[in-house]
Length: 121
Image (tube, rainbow, N blue to C red; front, side, top):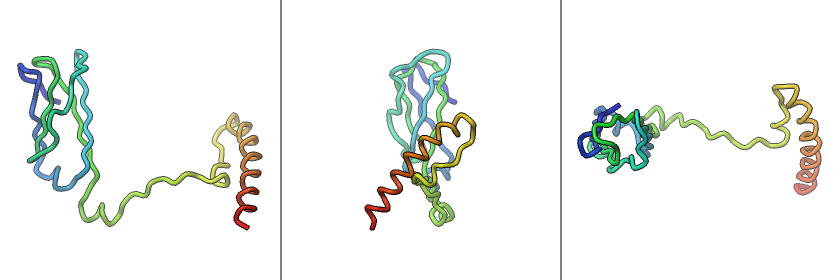
């Protein structure tokens, strides 16, 4: 959290390791106590700091910065993006309501699977 100055701005200092271990930053700002429709990141991370502007004088701002890790371990062990399920993979259900709906989906998937097999042959 930070408190904005009289001009409704602030400079946020990050730890030494932050920009060394991360890249492709994402910013989240939330005004505390009053709306701040003009609140924004006025300058992105440079030399371990970024600037916020557009808030009320002396206003409070909750902020969060995230990034993609770029250390050796993270680069060697990237998380795989979840792939879209095929009809076969989408047949599991977790509730009875979903089960009754899944019958319709299963029938539709069987038709799609047959069409796909025919197309591949």
